[in-house]
Image (cartoon, rainbow, N blue to C red; front, side):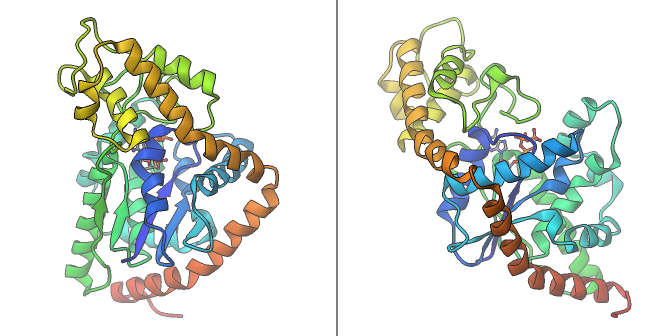
Length: 324
Ligand code: AQP
């Protein structure tokens, strides 16, 4: 089983990133599990160079704080392995404009940009390259990546059919609870680093007071029946999912324990604070030594580069590019 998954250093990871992806990554750590901070994806949106540099280190520190470690798996920075954009170009010559136009994340995020970046449009192809470079069999991701994963599979199959068997066709892995954590203020859209308002997202480094305040202000509905029903009660169901993920229980069962929204919110806040506390404690120690984080990341890139180089060589030769 070869695992690969990534996260953009576009801000502090939030509960959606943690429950949808990072918690699974920690659970699936083996020497064949590769995780990357996808900085080349982060530059598809406006980001100041200083912020990108700082956030890349902070993002890596927060992943180590969540439980990744270089002894059990490998964490690296995407731009440190030059074969990601190189393979992406080959795959851009296999993917179609129509496929990319159908990507809902492009439609949502593109609308918000003043400058319509080509990179935001082709980003799902780079994501396919990230995955296919390593012979990935499984990709642990949140539910929002379903469409991108399907595209990566489609591109792999098309390439194999056209140029001969080159890529492994990857399977997604979604968590049973927390696969789609919703914005606390707009519970019909996903919690997002760049789109959610400060009150709509809980960052994993938020203080206990901030977490309690945000959950207290979370949008629910006007009646007062506690029910796990995503269609009629998305805000409440989102809170039940958070409490379930933080306590390892079933959201339906939890709903039976509550008659008042206030009690559910108070318990959810307490459980989320307790879940994040050890992560925050470890982060405070790790971020004190950014050069150590950088050296761990460099080591990670060195470890994975030969695999990426070999896959790239196979793909380029299969397409007819001359080997050097
Ligand atoms: N709300 C979410 N619920 C569950 N999983 C989520 N993920 C993201 N949001 C949720 C999962 O987190 C991993 C890393 O995501 P990303 O950093 O690559 O970017 P994203 O999916 O575009 O997430 P954001 O937070 O919305 O980032 P921005 O705003 O910067 O684009 C992925 O596995 C994703 O599924």
